[in-house]
Image (tube, rainbow, N blue to C red; front, side, top):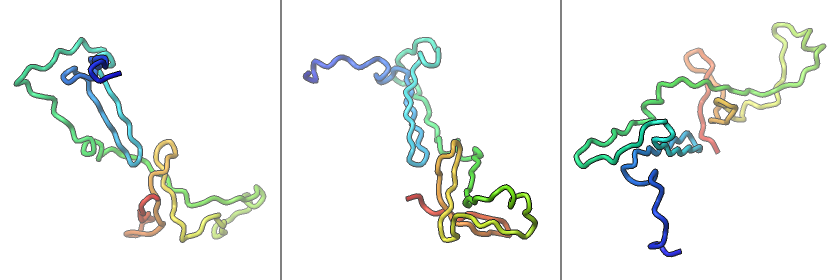
Length: 134
């Protein structure tokens, strides 16, 4: 099919249609949404007239920057039989399957790997020194 024979694009994709394209990128994950007036149940949009103010963009990173997010850190795992577990006392040691020179994994919501880091201390508190993901 030649370009001059191509069908006209859907009205949703035309400039001034009232549709909003939103792209959200968090780390290596991207989400692209195209919202039109039918998605929101709004009446049909009219094409903006010359001289009308366009919609003002928002800084999504700034808007989301204050949103709290819980991260979980997995130090390692251990296999202990129930008899040993019942006899544990303060001061006993359980050996984990990880070593101190291996970066720890920090996971966010839904168990997705967010970043890696090394266990440490800062101002008397346990801390994670963040390293880049591979």
